[in-house]
Structure formats: C-alpha cells, structure tokens
Image 1 (cartoon, helix red, strand yellow):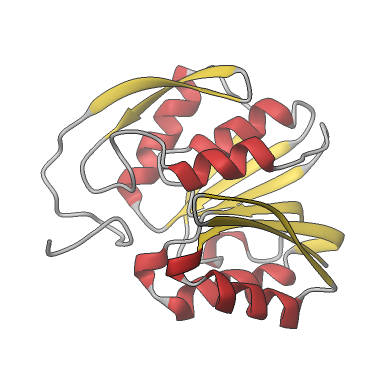
Image 2: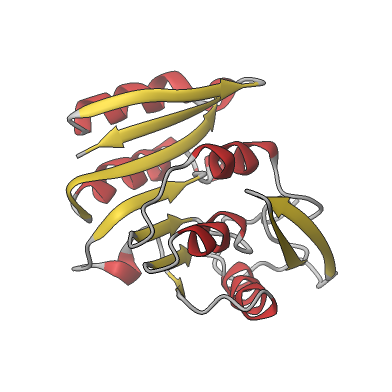
Length: 198
C-alpha cells in the first residue's frame, strides 16, 4: 500500500459506500471511501470512545483526526448547545465528514483540513477527543497529546482511545507527564480510554 489514511491527498481510487450505525442510541448515516480510516465500519476503538466520553451540552469540543466523522458528529449530537470542531490532515476524510454532517442534519460543527493543530491555533476548547493516527508514528501521536494541552481551557479534558499493542503504556506516560490528572476510564479488548485533565 503506497499511501494510507494519514496523508493529505490519498491516491487510492474512489470506492464510495455508505452505512448506518447506532451510537449513543442515535442512528447516524455515513458515507465512506477508499483512503480513509476504517471505511467499512466504525472501528471498535472509536465506538468505545464514543460510548464512554462525557460532554456537557454547551461544550466546545475538538475532534482530532476526525476521519469521516463518527466521533465528532456524535459529540455534536450530545453537545447540543455547544460547538464541535473536527480536524484531519486527510482532505478526502474532511470532505466526507462535511457530507456526513449534512446527511445527518448536524449544524453545530466546523470541519477543517489541519496538520495536527495547524488549523486551530489560538482557539480554546473544553474537550479534545482523539483516536490518534497510530500509523503516523509515535511522534505525531505524542504531539497530539502535548500540543493539545495549550488549546484546552483550564480544567479542560482530553479523551484518548489507544490499543495496548499500539502504544497505550507510552501514551499513558506522556499524558501523565503533561496533564495534572490522568484517569483510565475504561478498557475493553485491549483498548484503553484515558481522560487527561489540564
């Protein structure tokens, strides 16, 4: 495979499909395509994060590495009086996420192309959600943790899902070095949900 989902412009030929999925008792419809992460169904890690995350109705939320949108769009349905910003380096994923927001009638979102946090500098969020792009490498994943700290309001939270075999122990260590408080909220099938508080 010459390129993968962590690339600005995937070279994979288009192969669109769509499916519906129930998340937090909300049925959402998703368009997906080749060259984006977990295009055939929502991956277990994202589902675990979605089912575990806690958001206030008015929260300002940032979904980092949003893909075609399952985490951020569900967050927008939960933070009914808030706003969800969704970012991804992959232009095809961002285009799909915008289409999925429209298909599900979700208006309180802002979906942008962004290399790590380049597209949201100077903004402040109450919650950052991420299923980090493991294939991008540890340096990028750890940058998501450390640089996200500066974008969070005081007392803000970063919620992370990560698989044990894909670096959960080192992720936990990096979060503990960066944040005031880190809690393992859930674990299932080798996946961990960490909540880090600024």
